[in-house]
Length: 272
Ligand SMILES: NC(=O)c1ccc[n+]([C@@H]2O[C@H](COP(=O)([O-])OP(=O)(O)OC[C@H]3O[C@@H](n4cnc5c(N)ncnc54)[C@H](O)[C@@H]3O)[C@@H](O)[C@H]2O)c1
Image (cartoon, rainbow, N blue to C red; front, side, top):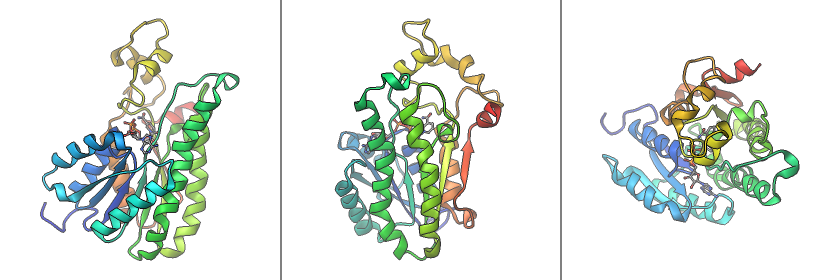
């Protein structure tokens, strides 16, 4: 592909949590389709973002920036750095998120609740506060994608904080689609099932599915994960989410706003 070509050619995307599994794959996918990316993550992840940049055919297409989504000022600084480097923002992928071990609601420590809400919900609120003034000035049709989850559609046991944040994003996307619509902007949510990243395939989470094993590996939970889906897979790949984000970011989705896109191998349908 030559410069100026691609499904998001010429667009500038702002991604939070860009050093993570879904964020880094999406950054690469958007760049491969002609975008430039302001890739933000925690200060502790700047080495990963630098490595991501160096892995690109054209490293200048990615600007690594430190930002903690729970801190509005750091996000505003990251937006300013991105606009300074690339001129504007067209796409925002509010992707930073955490999944902490939870329990029945009466046993969840307040600190767990506070951390999950500060990243997954307040972090998205801050991302909107920092980016919407730029998007409202941009008349080229901006696109905002909020990283929800199947937990944003159906609640599950021992997931109070995570589910609270991911369902809240559905309401925020609808509210913000009203706010950006008059400016030609769109806001949608993505709802992946389990993705093969550390967020889900970490030891602590695997033990929830195989409490009979001391040290379960991903292979030990394949059958348990498959049972929740219509298609015969245990989890999806980061590329599957990146492809959905690419579509929503592109002008192919120019009249899609306020929508909730599942990428879940049929799991929410299977649950009823
Ligand atoms: N992995 C899954 O199964 C799955 C399924 C559905 C939805 N999601 C959602 O997708 C998003 C990305 O998940 P992932 O699987 O790539 O996880 P990941 O852990 O690989 O990446 C998450 C990234 O967010 C960053 N982050 C955490 N706290 C932050 C903060 N305060 N400020 C800025 N960045 C912060 C982390 O440093 C990390 O790089 C999350 O919002 C998650 O809830 C994931």
